[in-house]
Amino acid sequence: MRADRVAVALVAAWSLLPGCAHLLRPEGSGGWSPERRAKELGERAAAAGVTLMPAADALAPPPGEPLTLDDALRLAAERNRRIAIAERQLHIESARVRQARAGLLPSLTGSGRYTWYTDAQTNTVDLGGGRGTRTIAIRDDEEGRLNGTLTVPIDVWGEASRALEAAQAGYRGERARVWATRLGEEVGVIRAYFDLLEAERLQEVTTESLTAQRTQLSNAGSRFDSGRLTKNELLVVQVAVRSSEQQLVQRQLAVDQARWRLNRAVGLEVNAPTRVVDVRTRPAVPPLAETLGRAYRENPALLALVEEQQRLEATASSLGRSRLPRFAGGAAIDWTSSAVLQPQRIGAGFVGFTWDLGTDGRREAEIAAAREAVDQNRIAIEAELRDLEAAVRATQGAAEERLAALAAAEAAVGQAEENLRIREQQFGAGRAASEDVLDAEALLTAQRATLASALYQAHSRRAELQELMGLAMDAMAPGER
Image 1 (cartoon, helix red, strand yellow):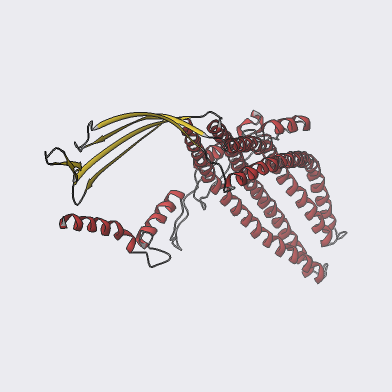
Image 2: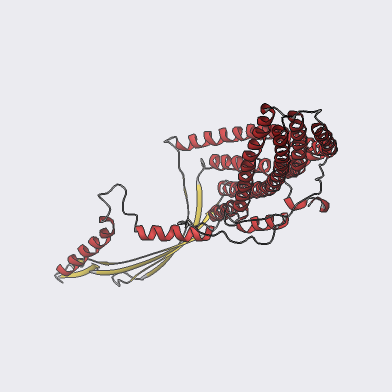
């Protein structure tokens, strides 16, 4: 008996021992050492392609083969972290559907227990008639019990069915949000891709302009030395050269930033020297009526709100039906190792109900909140419809404006080049000032910059339009990429 008490005390002490290490500290130990935390972060950094302790003199890896737009989208589908997170969330919603479905399926539970008592329980019975007494065992000092119960829910009022419908609608809504995330990340890839092309073309334009300005500075210096140009005119050219040199630094930064964004979006190392293949074809912009109609039918953000509406309504219906009794039936079997009572194994069948009368008011509060959420989501759908129309009209207008700017710049570049040639001839003949040449050069640079950026910006606007329509990015016309 004494040994039994000691054993019970040891079991209790052993169960409390793991919690004693951090009971007195509000932050706890967490169970991870600093080395374990550093190891975990290091593994995640390696998977993310990030160097936690970069060397100051580390050499950049050599450039690989240039990426096409299709290659960039394929890499994003495989390596983009935000897409991966969204897909994991969809798996979570799938598990929640299975959890809700469990409310309609049978459940089997088992329990067992072996107990040591300090003494056996007995009772003494007087047999009467002078026959004396008899001791009857009521409970042994050791006893094992096993129980198995099969419970089958009986969804009379449809409460569990509505909960399952709500979970399934939640899954469909999450699937639409995953598609929206995928489209958004792919648009980010396309935008970064064309931003990189645009930044590189603008860098080339600035370099060409700087070369022309330096030539102009050399000519102005020669004329100043010969007394045919004032100091003020020479200073104007020098300032223009310095300004273009600074702008060239800005262009290089823009190139680097666009490359970093592209690498992050496609899952490459952030500082990888990625190169991209140029795109010269023009995007096709569909008619506004077609764009709006498709956006209303297939925009994933709008579809997610519609599915959310069904989820909220089904949830409110399920909560309302929980006011009624819940029925269940099933079977059970009990076994005991004690032979005091016979039989040692007993089976049973049962049917019954539980009824929560909701006297505390919590259920009614949940129902009221669910109904308000239904109405709130209806307003959100209306707001999304209005926002979607505004976004489609603005994006389509922006795409058409960029294509119009491209067409205008194509014609204007030749005219600006001719204007610059005339100004340079006039400057050589002494009939034009340095400011006139610089103005002509600035005009040509502006038109070249428009020509270099309008096409790529039009492609980005077209990708944004496809996102609003819910179209995959590989659904572009074959001639557009």
